[in-house]
Amino acid sequence: MISANLAAIFYLVSGILFILALRGLSSPDTSRQGNYFGIAGMIIAIVVTFLSIGNFSTSLVYVIIFLVIGGAIGAFIAFKIPMTAMPELVAGFHSLVGLAAVFVAIAAFLNPAAFNLGNVGDIKLASLIEMSIGAAVGAITFSGSIIAFLKLRGVMSGAPITFSGQHILNLILGIGIFVLIFYLCKTQSTNIFWTVIIISFLVGVLLIIPIGGADMPVVISMLNSYSGWAAAGIGFTLENTALIITGALVGSSGAILSYIMCKAMNRSFVSVILGGFGADNSTDNKKEKKDQKPVKSGNAEDAAFLMKNASSVIIVPGYGMAVAQAQHALREMVDKLKKNDIKVTYAIHPVAGRMPGHMNVLLAEANVPYDEVFELEDINNDFANSDVAFVIGANDVTNPVAKTDPKSPIFGMPVLDVEKCKSVLFVKRSLSPGYAGIDNELFYKDNTLMLFADAKKMTEDIVKNLD
Amino acid sequence: MEIDPFIFRLSIFILSIFIGYYVVWSVTPSLHTPLMSVTNAISSVIIVGAIIAALAGNSESIFNTSSIFGFIAIILAAINIFGGFLVTQRMLQMYKKKKDKK
Image (cartoon, rainbow over all chains, first blue to last red; front, side, top):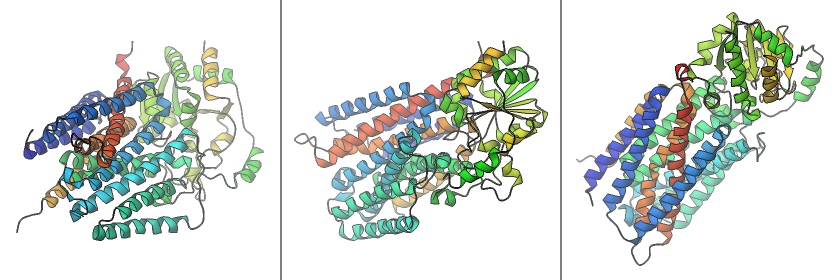
């Protein structure tokens, strides 16, 4: 049994180790070490908790058993999950943090004495406020992440679900939560506490269903942030420094990522939350009109010929590459090109994929060295000096309309200047528009050659033709 | 008049938000996915609350309503801790520089 003061110091140490864990991610070289700091911080926090309670009765055996069960499930998932499924996994993990926060809050409400928060029916006012906020945010995180998970998994359609009065309803429910918390503080009623949690679950669902598939990178980042604030709320309740520091770190991390994603789509955070983007309304008649425009299409042989005679090639991967699992074939193609002394680099748009950094992980998985992969700002000027741009599975992020047509819904969004390349190879299954529901002008440019096929199959065919 | 300890916790909280702000801006964009999975893992330090709740049951009734919620929360948080750190580790192992190539 160690004193509360000593325990608090150890919690501070684990909080600092968590800061170092995030700091390590500033470069891939230091990142692995950072992860060990994080693990060390977690071990310290858990061991110190055991020591400070000093209850080594039979309960402890059960705690360890449950810890091992959870750990085994987690480890199993971590090793089995394919890299393409990272967005779903992260959404799933967020939901677990949210639910854990709710359960800890419930446990604290039912047995406040164990946490030194007063007695049942007479919980300290500040603690009651903190635990209900923690529980409410946790519940929103949980149900919101479940919806995000289902959308990413494809169980639920990525199309936004909207109905009239939606925003008013959300507003009323949101205000309702605050009013209920106010009454909870006055009455300490268990029923009101449960009602707060149930309404919060509902708000989580309502908040995420109107958000379309294209905005998923923002949603995931936002839920990341919520899970942090929920943890911080519980941290205040438990008066635990490690939890408060972590909650603040995670909360701000998620908020920054949401900001970066919104900026990369030129969308305001508010408009993402209000949702509705990504609906395919009115695309039908637009498509009919555009289909008459001439499109040059080619096959794998043409593509191989073009690339063989190039001296520099820039690859622009997108979500389609992930869906087709084409990253390994792509790597093979690049190896062949490099053997012919062709300079190959990768250009990644911040919102390519379904979560921040998704493409980078997939390329890393396919053994692409990270110093060949560049972000939008770093590579955008190189397109003008390159021979071939190979667009695989990306669409809206290359659309020149974003620069030219003020009426376009994506106008002002930073895009990759793919069209400045001498020639553009565009791998796509059809001429259908991307998630934003708008036609890509790039398809009809003179220097664009469309390669209509599944990304993986086309890449494999090109590899064959490169011999 | 004495300062309420809550204010100290609030100070820690606000300062940590600032630390988080500067640290996360320095994270390279190519590591944003590992950033999310590692933040997931560390926010599961909420497990300390779950452990306190679970151990609060006495020897006659290890499982009461409150401790059961604690035990379930332990499982949930443990999935996240192990899953989060291990999947981050797995991802970070894949990031290689050009010269590391065989």
